Length: 161
Image 1 (cartoon, rainbow, N blue to C red):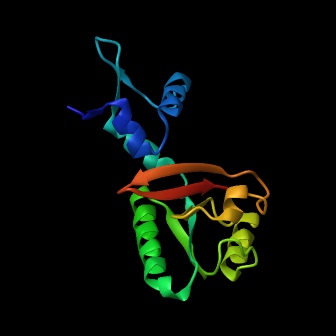
Image 2: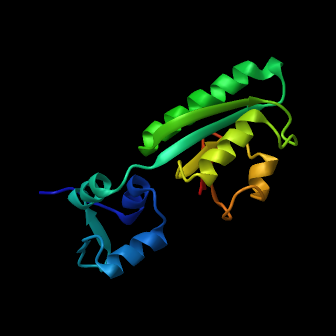
């Protein structure tokens, strides 16, 4: 017998919200089994089908610290975000590191990041610390959608571009 998942489990595996799952069910995008009590259960084969069929998400990792004394923290950020990207199934196309103030909008790495985003060479930007320039989104063509994901009392911010 095939394994049936609760909606919460399916949402976690698909990296979608519950409302998105419900919309997909209504649209027939994903097949479900309804229990006698009227609850949805999603066959694991549906999750696999969807995950195999979706396009690869291209990610850029952006890590920044304020001073050279914090280089260890910079590497910790990169390692954490690389592991996060791997767990989510993202393809990391580039890792950008900056050692400069968050208020400095002319940072070499930040300017490189903006080029990648404007050239549509990435789908998402992953960073652990929200950066002033990215919070405002003033350098990006489209307004970014920011979703905070809490993991081990640290924040990883995924900005879909």
